[in-house]
Length: 149
Ligand SMILES: [Zn+2]
Image 1 (cartoon, rainbow, N blue to C red):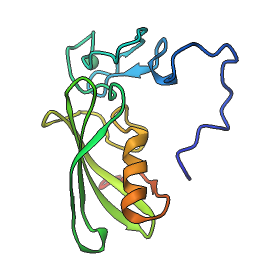
Image 2 (image 1 turned 120 degrees about the vertical axis):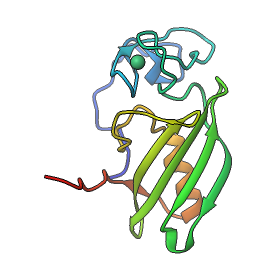
Image 3 (image 1 turned 30 degrees about the horizontal axis):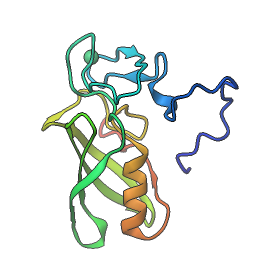
């Protein structure tokens, strides 16, 4: 499944903001699960108002700063910087020709407590787009197979 939200119903009263994820309740902390909104023209500050964690979604656009690839896409490490100056790092592995599992997502070097799956607040469209550029074809993400149960 491609990360595509076009099937979802959207509010017809589109705000002036170009990003839909920063609206009321559109941000979520990957550490404590707090949901909050941010309204403003500047990128949000990148800090959870409830627990002060920096493991909240990227502010503005992620910019790729470093990448490391192992042969056969066995391991992919990508680093980005967002508009608030945080470093987002992702460790991925290929589980299929175009399918990747996110093993770890960290912000400023600390891993979020939540599962870094495709629905994690820390996973931005930029990750999929960057990976698609590297692979040369659209890619999708799949949650890691649970090791127990
Ligand atoms: Zn929090």
